[in-house]
Length: 473
Image 1 (cartoon, rainbow, N blue to C red):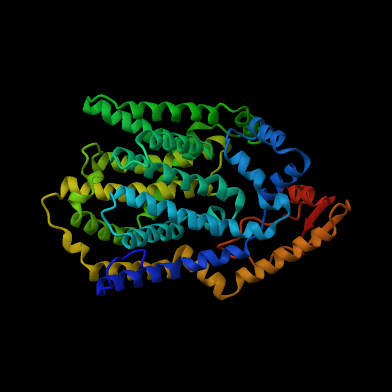
Image 2 (cartoon, one colour):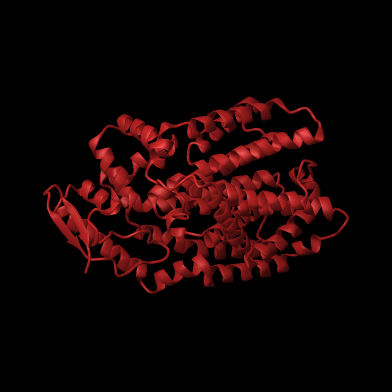
């Protein structure tokens, strides 16, 4: 704890350390089950392509046939199973959770102008990370499936680092030098846009909103914002103008149904929006109100005038959900897998707490709400939230999957499959496998089909070099 303190530990610091230990204990099961993950579904689709062609040819093929995700298209070719490294595959989720914690910590430090101690900032980052993992609509695809996680979750991580750099820049807290800091921000913006369409739409919306706010205030737009806006627009054009987008849409002949996409998207906005304003969110909002109120003059970011009123903010929260849900409906006519909703969940939660910080200073600036920062109250709120994290939703799924050995049984069955297919590799034979009997909620995505022509069976058969795979009792 020397990293956090210069003075000896006080009673208050013991509470902070105890909270840190409790939060790390809750996070540990999410890290632990990483070692039971296995490649599945589209992991094999790109892995067998990598075996047949060079990286450059494969990358060009994806850009012209699958879409313009110029960063994701590169990362999926680096899937560890393309190099027959299952062990490394299991470390990827663990690494992504830890790097997410780092990015959240950095962003929170920037947002609060480093007015809080490091250990308090770390605790806040841990609470937000656990809240996101807890609320995530599909944990298995969000974290533990390589193809989905590098597409969406890793994109979120880079986006948060970009937001942190952005806040630091306009708070004049530069990294090395102003121009170098700006250059790093532009670079991260270009990288972030290349992950997925939904993250691109969120970033486009953000930059348009900032320009709109300047326009409403009738103030001159800073040169930096114009540079960031045109950077965002240029790389978004690369993303959406890719020939692969049109090619991919051919797989869904009933797509581009505007009214169906609109109506179903609005229903999903109501469904998920109401679900995410949960008890832990409300409790942590109370704690955050106390923090902002007690450090009001030390957090200049939340003292700015450039912010939306509550009704506009509510619409923006709905808009975040809409831009993440509408594209899948428009492109495929179904919501499909909930990878994109995971993205909406994150940005929804992030913007919710940013709104809390601003409204404390806008509407309650004459109120003394510092009593909400009382250490005992904060500890009580944190304890309640931790209990909820453990006993409900994804936290409950993770803990029970471990407790009842579901992840271990899943790991054994998947390893047996992998060993069987490895033995039969390149023999051009029909391989018969049994369906999984253990499907842990925290890890399971999709299983093989009884239909040997199913795309999952086809991809896995091509990867191992067998004729077909049939999965049935």
